[in-house]
Length: 402
Image (cartoon, rainbow, N blue to C red; front, side, top):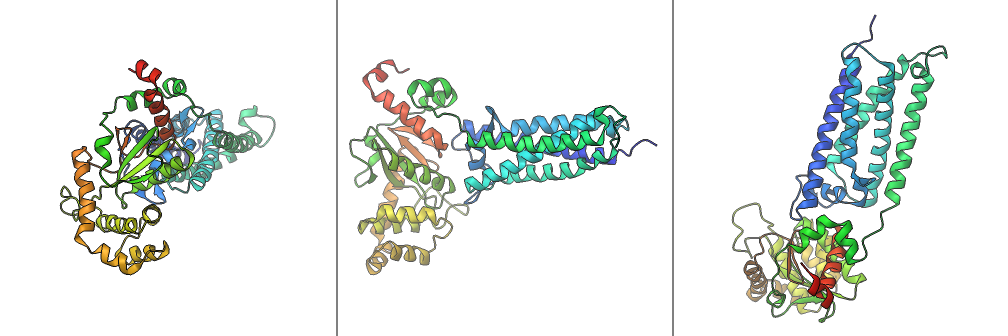
């Protein structure tokens, strides 16, 4: 009696489902790579943020996206399940199918560890992991159909099936762990960026440039030296998830580099401060949060309060704003009077209008030495941008720039 094709059919369906999920993850990763303003549908801010995971150093294996490896594995698994689906089960195909499913489970475990390290959860990745677990549990019982003795060829033996599954699982965990721990050497020079990061270099150097002096305003919130080689003017919104991502990267950049200045300007996507935002869908607490930051600035605590707002982005109601004011040591009576003063909102609106004149339409929008970047950059790309800007500012770089 020929073996039932039911298990192979389920394995085929799961492999096709996994291939579709991996293809979608690959598409999202490509969009994130090519468009800094792109936001995936599963970027919900905070911990649930596919964009952080899909652009992290854990997202590539041997130079290729992990999702591309997943697409290849699932596609191969679908082909290997076909003989069983057609009632023509081939032991060697089942052996390879066991190896693929087991190896995929190993990589799923590594990816789970990577998300734990990043502190971010990727819903697309979790869906792929769920498919992998179901795929593995579906395929594993095929090992029982292999011959128990040594009379059969090695690829028909039960010991071969069990050993292959274990070896694939352990090997995948080992390879994935090593690849995750051993990060590639970063690009450190202009020539490194131009050759090894050619896609970013071409995209970045084609961005429009505005005169930096027109972007700063009269009373900027500045962090860093006035004569910094690279100045970054940031138009931002305290309720914007991408702005929170940029906040962490820019704070690290300013703390580690003495040649960078950051200038913060408000651009809340809230109709209370921004005339272009009408109807629902905006950031309803962003205007009040911006006003609160201005009140902190009047007491010399702007950057401390700025950091607290981004670190507590999910809680920007009026009561929370007063709690943060107390935590950073503000005079609460003065803070209350300032928060409700018309001139405070007028200060925020002035930033918003300056943003409109500069062509700002979304947040964050960064002007790196006047070069317009819409959206948060990937973590390593901030340093690449600095390398390019310093080169272009040098006499040699200016003469040789194209």
